[in-house]
Amino acid sequence: MGIALTGSGSCTPQVSLDNHGLSQIVETSDEWISSRTGIRQRRLADAETSVCAIAVAASKQALEMAQIAPTDIDLIILATSSADDLFGTASQIQVQLGATKAVAFDLTAACSGFVFGLVTAAQFIRTGAYQNVLLIGADILSRWVNWSDRGTCVLFGDGAGAVVMQANDRDRLLGFEIRSDGTQNACLNLAYRPQPKELVPGVTIAQGAYQPITMNGQEVYRFAVKKVPEVIEKAIFRSNISVEEIDWLLLHQANQRILDAVAQRLKIPPEKVISNLANYGNTSAASIPLALDEALRQGKIKPGDTIAAAGFGAGLTWGATIFQWGR
Ligand code: UT7
Image (cartoon, rainbow, N blue to C red; front, side, top):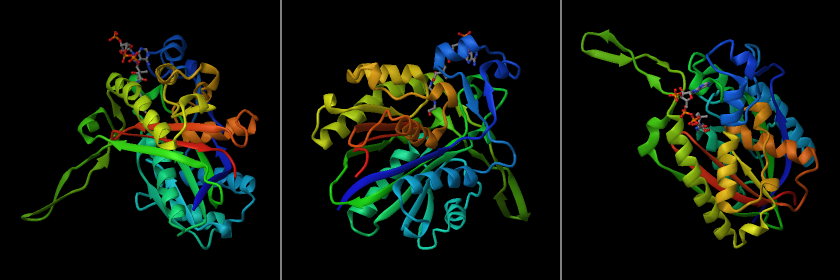
């Protein structure tokens, strides 16, 4: 069974914080942040804004573009690392959309979550199990950022993006490659720290809390610049096309220098590189569908265009997929 991506949508919180605003919180400057990362501002969710709410808003747009009803959806996958509920947030999205037929679950692969979700969704369509899948990438990492760590707090922003994937006569998902390497897990964490608690003598359990994000930026940078071009080349090879046939390079929006270095290694010219991180920062699982949706609505990406999308991040995880937009 072939697969097509037929609808997209996105939602970001209203409130934005620019680099000057950040310099009131930590010792930094607009000059440092924009020259080292390309980021100029980011959107931040207030206390009333949930992952579910921005995911639902993005999903409604995607369903409208795909021209399908919520009741047509067979499966909802929410890629997130900042779920409203650790038991899963996808079911709350299901009920708010009125997707009564759909099964819904969360998938966590940090900033690779959207690509991992796309590949997961594709397997259900390929086998004929499901026809219509709603895939969402949504994160509110501002909840988990250490706002006194200038090495990380300048990078992240909040947002959501969604796509509709459908069974299609013509196969538009040409190839993929996804990878993990737990040996480098310590480079980037949002980890639970246990606190021993004795229930009765001899029976101790742990009740702790998640700790804010920690990151070795240079290690993650080196990893991304080396591994992302490799995985894209592998996905291109599996797609049986050449790199010249790629119309758009759509990378996880982490750092403009990473986008530039990956494009350079693949010999993809800058005008084919999608970038919107100046306005949103790194929105984790949301960054690829958010940039995709913006480029589609600007008329930049057109039906039939061939897109190489790649995510990378904590785990460590990374992956690429090659697809053509539309039916
Ligand atoms: O989804 C994946 C998420 N993670 C990433 O994508 C991270 C990948 N890594 C990066 O993007 C870059 O490594 C960073 C943007 C995080 C850092 O850039 P860098 O060029 O690797 O800087 P650095 O860590 O080597 O730091 C250079 C200097 C240091 O000062 P000294 O030791 O040279 O005096 C830092 O203390 O810059 C300092 N610094 C800052 N200065 C002003 C670090 N953060 C800041 C800051 N403002 N926000």
